Structure formats: C-alpha cells, structure tokens
Length: 264
Image (cartoon, rainbow, N blue to C red; front, top):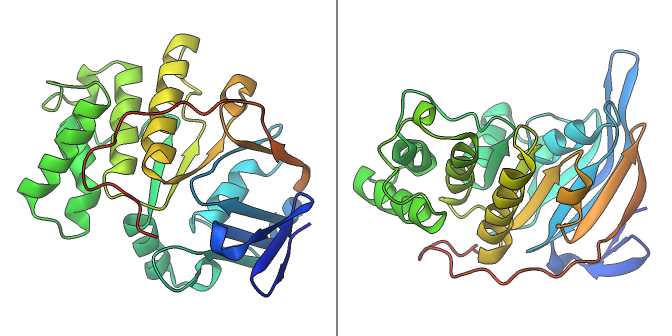
C-alpha cells in the first residue's frame, strides 16, 4: 500500500523519501467494459532503479505500464513524474501534453523493436532528437555514439531488414536512450528473441539505462529477465500481489556516451 505524506512515500513496508522517487502511481484503476484491468494499484519507482512487472496474461501489467507512460489515462488514480524540476501530473495532461512527455522525457523499447523500416539504423536512433529540435548533424553524431557503444559499429547505414533480431533490439535500446530520458519503459523487450540473444539484449538495456542514471520499468513473462532487475512487482487480477527486491548483483557498465547523463 502506498501513502504519500509530506516528503515520505510508504511502500513495500518501508519509507522512501519522495526526493528518491522518479515515478509514483497511486490508486490506479482502469476498466475495459466489464473487465477490471487495474483495481487501485499503488507503485513507487526509485531513481536509477530497474523494476520488472510480472503477471499472467490479463493481470494488468501492460495496462499499468501504459498508464505510467501516459499512453493510457487511468479511470481513477494519479501518476506523477518527479524529474527535471516540478512534479508532472501525467494523468491530467492533455493528449498533446502526454505525447510531448513521451517524446521528450520517456524512452520506449517494444517486443518487436518497432523500428521504421524505411530509415537506417542511424536515422532510427536519431529520430527522437530530431523530433525534439536537435540539428541533424548533432543528432546523428549522438546516435552514432550509442550504436558504437552497443556494439553496432559500422551498421548505422543498414535498414532494419538488414539486421538480426538482436541487432534490431539494440538499435531500439539506443533509440530509447539517445535523448537521456529519466525513465525508459520496455514491454517484453526479449519476448521475440532466443535465450542467448535475450541475455545480450538485457545486458545492453540495463547497462544503457541504469548505467547512465536512468530508471527502467519493464514488463516481462520471463523469470530470468525479471531476476536481473532490482525489484519485481507481481500483479494478479489487477492488484499488486508482491512487490520486493531481487537477489542479484548489478553489473558495472562501461561509461555511456558523453552527454547522456540523466538530469536531476
């Protein structure tokens, strides 16, 4: 249960100062017709933390991610982003405001990558910066640094159809990081990959996100993927059934490309 009181957030049995949180969902409720997807879910995500959201199909995990990311508006409850200045009430933003938030302050990695097939890998990664007004040369320079850092040197001019599934997902990881968003959301990012490629993709995703001070919120069915995150939240019938830390050692990543530290 989460209770916001003054500067302290109580969840999973211990207090956390709101200064340490980047994202808070409180009392989140969402229905689709007669079907309850979320039934008053409370969640607080810390800065620099990686959180895996798990549950059976229909448990509400993707709906929770979409509400936190501003893709969906909850029927009831609040979503607050604490990053880069004054808190943002995500749930109360206009559709245009939520689109701007997703473009400027969130990053996304989806199961199939969702790269634009007509663009090169370099152009796909540079796209968020271009949409935010960065000059093309600078955007492509930063995109190239991320591709190199993720082991894709020399592949910037290839289109998605010329890349393997694992390479496409690393391009998607680079695209999610290039604007240095405070929060990256990943929806089954390894779901279409074999076990070895899944391991490589998770290594890249965790190092690229938490390694630069960002926060990762990830939906997965894969227990091995969840165990690599700092914390697991399990949903059952739209309710939080479990919320607790995992027993793992976070790897120490190499330095992320310059200019990609998350703003506090």
